[in-house]
Amino acid sequence: MRFKYIILLAFIAVNFISCIDDTKVEFSEINITTPENKIVEINIPKATGVQTVAQNINTTIESAVIEYLKVGDLDNTPKSSVENAIDAFNNEYENFKTEFPESAIEWDAQIDGEVMYHSEVIISIALTAYQNTGGAHGILNISFLNFDVETGDLINNENLFSDFSAFKKIANSYFNKEIAGNEDQYFEPEKFSMPANIGFDDDGVFLLYNAYEIAPYSTGLTEIHIPFDEVSMLLNYM
Image (tube, rainbow, N blue to C red; front, top):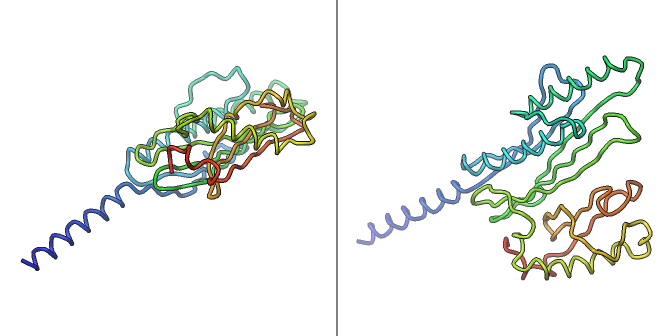
C-alpha cells in the first residue's frame, strides 16, 4: 500500500511539473530583415511555449511593428508580415529617391523590443520605434504591451486595475511631483490625463508619455514610476 501511495504522489508531482512547463512562456530576441533591406533594423522578443499563448503574443508584437513601419498617414496598404512591411518601407524610400533625386535625405527605421517584466500572471513588453523619413527630426515612439500569461491576450490599461479611478488619483500625485518646477513645459499641466502607455518593471508601475502627448517635442519623454507598495491593492495582475 505504501509503495502505491509513493507511486501516486510521484505521478501527481510529475503532472504538476508538466502543467507548470506547459504554461511557461519564454522569450528570445530575434532580428528580422529581408534580402533587399538596407535601412530597417528590427530586434524584438519572440515568445515560445504553449503554442496558442505564444502565437497571440507574437502576433500582437508583429502587428505593432508593421504599424510602426507605415510611412505617414497615406500608407493604408495592409501588410501581411513584418518582412512585407520592411520591403514596403524600402520601396517607399526608393520611390522617394526617384521622385527627388537631388535630395540628400536618407531614411531609416529601427524597432527594438524588451521584456520589462515577466511574472506568473503578466508580461510587460516595451517597444521602442524610431523612424526617420526626413523632416526636422525623426519620430521616436515607445509603447508598452501587457499580456495575460495564461492566454497571451493583450490587456487594456483599465483592466490592469481593480479601481482605475483610484489608481489615476495616485498617478496624478506622482505626475505633479515629477513636473514640479517645470509646469511651463507642459500642455495644461493642471488637467491631468493618463498616458497611453502603462507598464511594469521589477519595482513597480511605469507610466510613459511620448513626445507631443502632453508636451512639445523639446520636452522629450516624461516617465513616472510608482512603487508596487503604493498600488498593489489596486492591481488585478499580481
